Image 1 (spheres, rainbow, N blue to C red):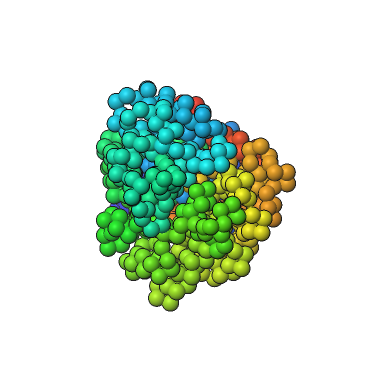
Image 2 (image 1 turned 45 degrees about the vertical axis):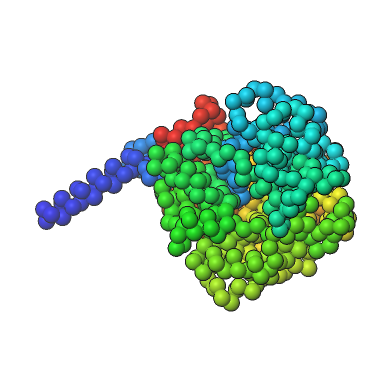
Amino acid sequence: MTMVRIALAALLLTTSTTALADTLVDNVRGATIGANGQVEQFTGLLFDATGMIKRVIHAGDKKPRPRKEYQYHIDGKGRVMLPGMIDAHAHVMGMGFAALSLDLSETTSLAQALTLIGKFAAEHPDRPWIVGRGWNQELWKLGRFPTAAELDAVTGGRPVWLERVDGHAGWANSAALKAAGVTAATKASAGGSIERLADGAPAGVLVDAAMDLVGAKVPAPRAEDRDIAFATAQQILFKRGVTAVADMGSSIEDWQTYRRAGDANRLYVRVMAYASGVDQMSLIGGPGPSPWLYQDRLRLNGVKLYLDGALGSRGAWLKAPYADAPTTRGLPQLNQTQLGNLMSRAAMDGFQVAVHAIGDEANATVIGAITDLADTYKGDRRWRIEHAQIIDPKDYAKFARSGAIASMQPIHQTSDRVMAEARLGPDRLAGAYPWKSLKSAGVRLAFGSDAPVELADPWAGLAAAISRQGPDDQPAGGWQPQERLAAFEALAAYTADAAYAGFAETRFGRLAPGMRADFVLVDVDPLTATPAQVRATKVSETWIGGGRVWSVEDGTTAGKSAN
């Protein structure tokens, strides 16, 4: 009897201690995607000291008792609570480095870009190379690619290497071309091209696979540089309410950066990593995907492969020639057999495969490869097609039957609209950025930003997904408006389904008992607001694992409170 009393006392003490460490956030207008795929509304959230959700409180529920069931209380002040946003396709280290280097994404003319480049070069005389990104000749209305000679005029003798906004072309000055040994005699590797002058000399822009000729000569960043870039990337994500991200194209250096942050308790965002090719996959993962590390903050899920390039640089692989360049159908990086071999190499060790495919021929080829492998590699594979921008409507049903996840970026549609019309012509626009058509066919969607190609802004993405309009509200009624999504479908693609796409649906992505307490407090309900209101959403707080990592009040990461 005495032993029973001791055991009971110990149980009561444990229960009391646990309850006193719990936190209640209430007085919120909460919304999450439920287990049934529908919207679930709630008024409060109770989570424990480990950052796991214990209860979701709905209107009419009995409220937890203070000091009995929780110790800490946070008044949500009527704000909207949503699951933390998940960016299903981004380049985390690229995002951080882009923020610390020359940014040309806001330039609207070649002259403006050259002025910024010259100013940056003058302000950083100690840098051996001038490195940056973000230029877009389409926004400049240039009608051509920029040249090395134009860069030479503002940069002098230091090498310059500037990546295009989509990361699928690079602009070099003469010093960079010389450093890389690129001459009239240099041949582009398969899957790439070198823009040339009339005499055959390199003009300054290298596309897709040819980019490595110069890019490989750029001095590699130090470990310290990488740590700073990653910390910067986390800040960018938290400000926008992003709590988890699929890092597409992780290198061993990226992975080690994340591990250093985790070991030092500075890894807060949840990173689902996809290695940059099978060699990096084997180097990082060895015999298979890594386990979840650091309280579900890091995992190597699989591998990222490239099948084609981008539409803007005419590298996307199309079934028919480009409307504005009838001599080319794009730059395929692999044929279906080569792609299938790489996919098989990853799948045999249980790695998830994500394939970059933008053009309709590229998407059809990936679908064909998945179909060919289906009998060999059974089970829950969750093949991913990254971007899936241009798809022949005849292939929608095949896409669905393959079971592939469409990892898409809504903001690309609004950014690319005018360019896509020029590249594709009117007859192929019905298959451009076909979110609703794929969803209706039974394809699961996962949404992201492709940052730093676009801003890591899920609110701009949500607005685009429900309107097919840009921030200028154009075009009236939406571009190919039949492809608009319902608000709850778009929210699912940024939360529950993005988690599913990364094998994380039992850990985060929804607000439910047993899940991680990853949430945001915002001023707008995206399920009822207008697209303009959604786009202008203000994030007041971002929480990961029951700890606040961002607050608009102090504008800094509150990492010490994160579990």
